[in-house]
Length: 183
Image (cartoon, rainbow, N blue to C red):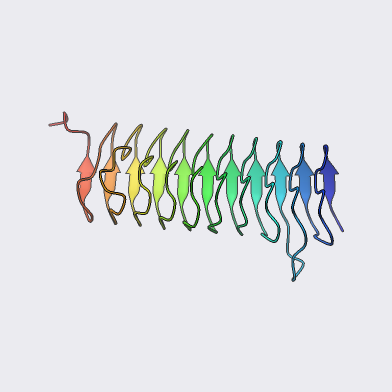
């Protein structure tokens, strides 16, 4: 009940999921139902939320946003944002932001390709195009600036703060202001 489906194969497999909005070719295609009736998902864009079967309280906006997502409480905005995510409570804004996030939770990525290679990192904030792009599994990092943290030489740095264009941490528990030419 209370569903809207507009587009070829939108909500195609829905059995008894409710409070769903699917607009676009194959949006929420695999949405089935929720044992507790709490679906409340919105997907706008071709193949947005395509593989979501039981996830609830999600917003997927853009082509393939949340394509393979099976998460809860996520917001993915942009072409392929959160495309492979199964982690919950993530917010990805910008094309390809969090595109490779698989099991990471509580992450916020804002900008084109921000957090793009994060696979399992937890509690990371990346703001700026390509920020934190190479961090795969580091936790509790704050990365702000264009290309900041994109050259993480190890994918397991934790609790580091990086600010500025192309600034890169060299260890966990570190604050880095600016890149190597900043004095």
